[in-house]
Figure 1 (tube, chains in turn blue, orange):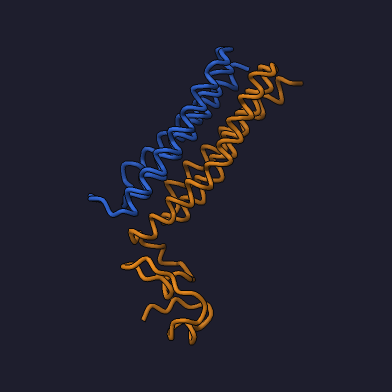
Figure 2: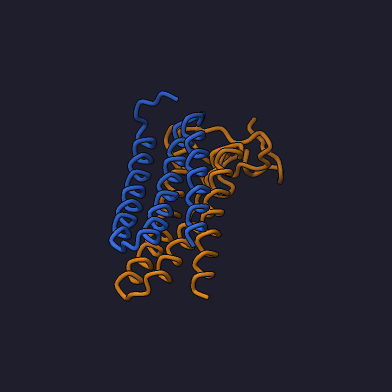
Amino acid sequence: MSNVILLSLAVMSLALCLAFVRLFRGPSLPDRVVALELFSSILVGIIGVVAIATDVPSLLDVAIVMALMAFMAAIGFARFLERGGPRDD
Amino acid sequence: MIEFLKGGLILAGSIFMFLAALGVVRLPDLLTRMHATTKAATLGATLIMLAVALHFAQVAVVARAFGVILFIMMTAPVAAHVIGRAGYFVGSRLWEGTLKDELKPNYDPLTHELKSGRETERNARREPGGTDDS
């Protein structure tokens, strides 16, 4: 079981690195927002796996808050883009 | 048995997340990237939360895990819709292999007005299957 957990953590860390590549290279601001959303989804997964590995069920609350913050950030960025704030792509 | 199921769910979830990240790096434009992240990452988080529910098997924890699943499944489409809409408004470029942009002849980017049906002259004699941006 611990091997499975290690493997999945490694795969998800690699996914985080790939999402960071898009966050760094993204040609426009919406691309970067999409990469940030992917970040938060992967973090929810990582927190779930860590909760299994350490037997701490309270970590699920952290996952809930993470998902909530990501949703708020996406909505906020979208409002900002639609209102036509200053952009530096 | 539960151990195998749990390991399978964790592995499947992490692989789906990896596929989402691969898609966000490899795909050519904003909408296809969102197509990769929204669905695959949601499915990955769902599978991992199912594994959490199997692991703890207490009522409170299972309820919270299903709460996370429900929340992600409800908010991911909304966030994707809002970002896609904003991305179209700010004029992010589509992939050059895109066959059809139905919004283009009907949408006025200055006033955010959308015409429907055959209101516009160009729309009435539009050829099917071509992107006419004359």
